[in-house]
Image (cartoon, rainbow, N blue to C red; front, side, top):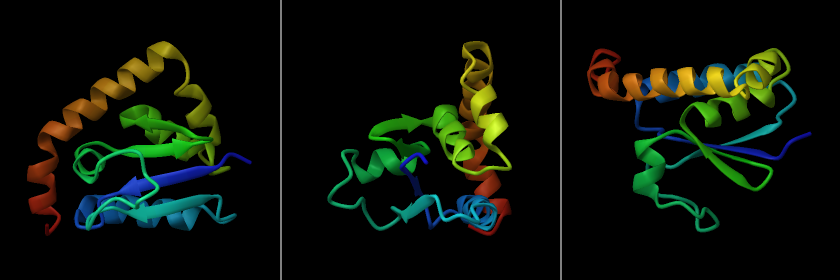
Length: 116
């Protein structure tokens, strides 16, 4: 089993909803979910501001961000594992990353609509 830590913004209503869904799907407890809204853990090699700017996942000692981070999280959840492996295909990863970057542009508006 992979060693996976997800760093998420607990102050973001969209992030909280997404993480709540992932926690429900992670029935084996394979993922450590770490809220970084009030600062990064001392053991984290990434500054809190950077963790809040983009989605970060530590998988087997490698820090992944954006779409690659989501794919790592998916690989740790049996139901989503096929999508996580599919996202390793370079073309698929590039498309997912572009979609993620587009999402980041509208995230502030979506957060306001979601009650943030």
